[in-house]
Image (cartoon, rainbow, N blue to C red; front, side, top):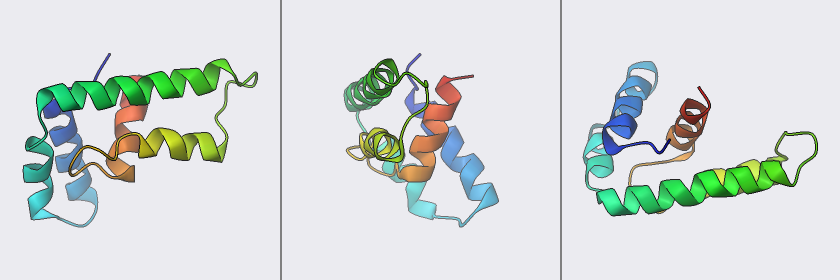
Length: 92
C-alpha cells in the first residue's frame, strides 16, 4: 500500500508533537505533487523489497537502509525520520 499525502502530513504532525516544531514542514510536504509522491513511494518500496529479496536473513544491512531512506529525498519536507515512519507504517 502506498502512502498518500495526508498520511505523510499526519506523520509530520505526530512527529512535531514529539520533537521540534517546524512550522514550514507541513507546507513543504503539502507542496509535493501527488504524482511525485506516488513515483517516489513506489521506488522506495520497490527498493526495499529488492533488498529483502536478495538478503537471506530478511534483514537489511545499514547501507541498504540508508539507500531506502535516501530514496525519499526527492520529496520536499520528507527527511529520514518521516521516511522511516512511512516505511514502518507500510509494514503494519
